[in-house]
Length: 317
Ligand SMILES: [Zn+2]
Image (cartoon, rainbow, N blue to C red; front, side):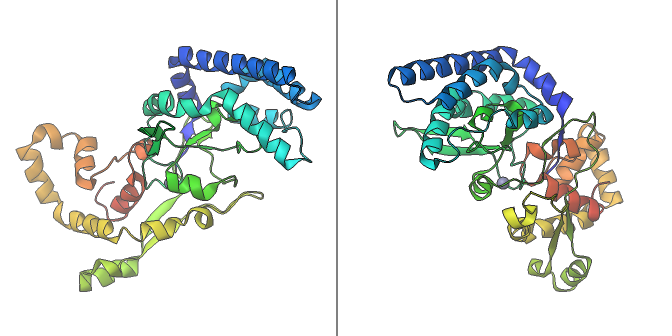
């Protein structure tokens, strides 16, 4: 629900230089092996061989390509066999297997995205991006859930491209599929201003709540930018309003906190626990029960909602 400056991500990638280089080398050698065995079995056509050769040649650049550069590579890597859907899918799966994306979900992505500061779904911000999955050995393992901004069904060559990876919850991943959403996680800007998404409690519903003290009277609104041509509508895709209108109890708690933490009570807390409550960031975090900076929205589910409502209620500035 908020973008990350691209140069910050580049600095994190530099810290994982060894891992990234080994992903590239693994990918190249698996693609070479794929080409060799499939040529021996005469199962590759000419276009497929050209595709693999070109991918081996460009893989080092494609893995760390900026979003704008990836866009440029799209024209170079249309999947072969566009008129033969079955063959196209078989070839796509072979490329995906060679790129090693599945293994990285448990070995690399958790530590990489931890450093970037993402643990909550970048689309809905309501759930974690870790899911428990059953391995072929039947062992359960916690894996990072990742959506590909440029869909892997058409571009398996970008399946391990770091700027094509969007950490998501299982629900958003399942519902989005290969649709294109008008939200860019990585922006080629130095600084990100505010998130273009906003949660607000309907003012009339707050007045009604004060009279009834019934959280069901609260109405949660969600505003978001309309989609550019060619992209799906954000709200229609993820049903954000529906998800967040199940959180009226949380909204009620925020209203009560805004009443409780008045200036005189805040002063009592500062006097009693100066080390904690003289630290504005930490004390605000305790007041709202979540992170308070816009840059920390991805660190915990519901941070965006909590920040927006807390600001509306003047619980924090
Ligand atoms: Zn989600």
